[in-house]
Length: 398
Image: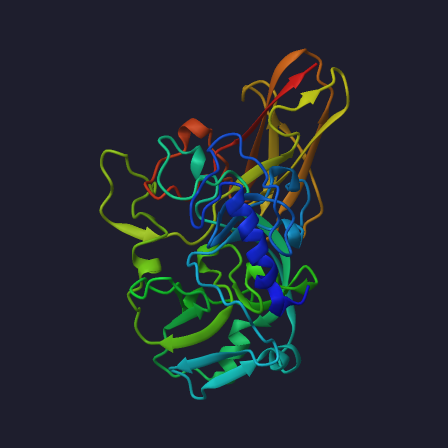
């Protein structure tokens, strides 16, 4: 499929989805018992589908047994429904302006040939991942655990591009805008800002994902990569970078993707905390990819529990497994390190020696000693952000 013909195929996929009771922009998946769609979007395998406009696709849990998420299984999250139907890579440019010495319009060809090429392996996770596990459930997309993925991103350091433009002395903030637009003219664009102090050599503009061009639905032809941060800051289909000396009030910075500004980042359903702050760095988390919920496991067979763990880049020190409802824990084996921002794949082998129901629990611990809490101890916020309760899969030994 030619990339510029993406939506010719996508229209057919959307029509099939609507024909199977999925209406544009409407969430139809139940909170429990999520099912993989029978229809696949272009460049994607069949995934858990919440909406076709904008596309909202969740990665099935069985993918989380490997340190790299395949492109065709990588989750999709767009905020605005108007996505370009045609992008010519030969004509595409990204504009850099504002408080710079030289305004630039950089082509894809120039990015690939006129700058040092770098790679970073990093986890991309929606701030609302696992939102449906909160009690009571907050409003928003009722993601399971699959609004996340890990990829090897290739591109150019943002700092190198800004050096080429030349920052003026009073430069403080970098604003990012992409090509997605709202259907209604008063709806704000999805614009994010980054303070210069947050910029390091791992922040890049990427045009490749796992050795291929970015999938269209994951931000082709260029997206911002901020390792360790939640995905709301990873702007897709990048079109414009503006450098300013003052923070610009923006809906998606000042209203959305925020948590209570207190020590626990929590509140109660009855009383919301007035002061809030943006979500930024990810907390420690693990997800079991195998076995799946409800699986039947043969008695005394050799079962290997597999999954992935990660945090904001501090590093995973240990992943522990419990088979007795959290009374005791044993360390799993961790795969080789793919980088501080990447998944740490884990595996734990054992032989089930009792018939009946078995609860498998996984808990990640990072190098600072931060660890996942039990689900009942996860503190609530009304946006449903940053859930990281100990992962649980229930199986039956037969």
